[in-house]
Length: 339
Image (cartoon, rainbow, N blue to C red; front, side, top):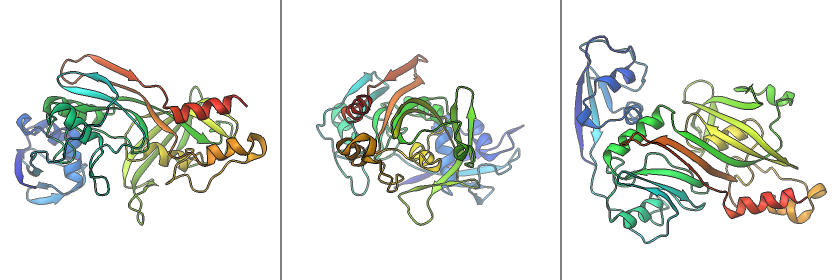
């Protein structure tokens, strides 16, 4: 992919860290959001006075020269596909979609078509923000293939940068509904002994760790306490349902697989999670064989992006959306309530 160099000279009285100084001094016309600058630093695309740097905390001073290698947007070659979309809001700058489980957000090896991006390109006639590159136009965040629910996509570059900045600042309101194994209870001494766990007022379980790719399995994320990326999830119990519990998970950060790996870390993996759920099964002694089998064979992680709130990046309007549970989760919850 073609690249170009953005050169930045650090001005007077800079923030002491590279990432914050760049966020202030990078030219506006470069269209580099805070989140994209962080990715460029991590990817080794930033040089400080000629020396590559990958630590956003690197100290900088007035007069330092930063060279940033940036990939240029290219014309989107991903093919438009006529796929029905559940559109919750659309305007000139953005669109909010309720994504079904089973749909990949953007093309990748193994999923070249049938994605949300393919569907959006058909819906818009190819008119999406080009900031995300050839395979990810308009995409400022994503949810996993087998997670259902709400996400926002940028239609204009202004919206793309504005939304990306909100995600980087952790100011976007994101709540997920999930079914987990067991009961995350503040009275559980085992849970209180798990590193990275504490309880906030209202019996809110707060999970604070670092997350990074697993050393041997590149499809997984791993919990760390040194290195990696800071990750915070808050969990509220909504309703115990026998051997599983209906919970609301609120993201402070939005890392890959964050809720799934955090819930597994505290011993309450999500129902149906094929990656982090291990071999955990519920017994049919109290549920009956049929209902136990429905839980044990649930075909995906029982996770739904139920609420999404943000400030419109162009108009400044407060935006908030909610999406009801999809049928598979709703029907399983109804069956458990009927016990």
